Length: 313
Image (cartoon, rainbow, N blue to C red):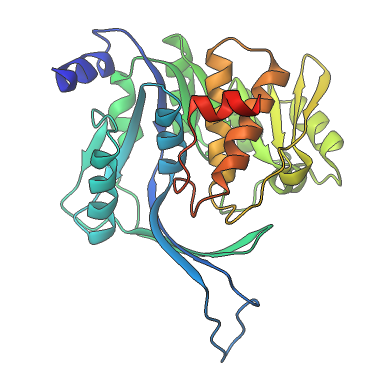
């Protein structure tokens, strides 16, 4: 009965889901407790290790744990990485309505070398399907908000965002990208104009705008995007809305691993946003969920619930 209800909601015949996330899974291999950074010809042995789903999975599961009904438009292949992540998704009780399965390999794996304040990555991704899950499933989606967990650009993104907004959905986009992106590029400006809220970390925001600090980056991005949020780690989070800059400090936490913290921030921010809270409270919720997530390995190792957020508030 629950499966039939979820499918009805996804195809627009029932009550809208809360959030639809559009993007890829990734399997994270995370090494912690490294005494130094690796160099050629030398082995560095970590004291901790975890193999856990990452990529969009971080935001999807964090939103789910905060009590929201989440749809996820994602592609899975026939490989071991896909199977591992799919088994975890089912064990975690995620809605499968928008999953797309392929007979070919679709390996997406990241090795994360995690240090207390930052991390380094090595990744491998098989080529994406010619028609990704987002393009296949979006016409069916019925949700209050769509989250695009990376900086995507081009005609497909613009058309997809336009379709979502016509159907009454708000569109949020994260600033994560594995290729250079500049606000001078027309495709980047078009992408930012097509969303309701753009969320980037400090490095991404300054790199995109060629600026040296958060305030300047906010102003530059805000000249294009309707609302901008910048995640600044231990310095908290900032937002530009209606010409005003707002700030919320980070929570004090002994971080074990910061992998996925930005994705978890997005989940906390969105939960507060959908509850109708003002911007400064949305920033606080993001800081709490993102900060607490660093107490586990990967973005999903620490389960952060509504009760956890309320205790910190």
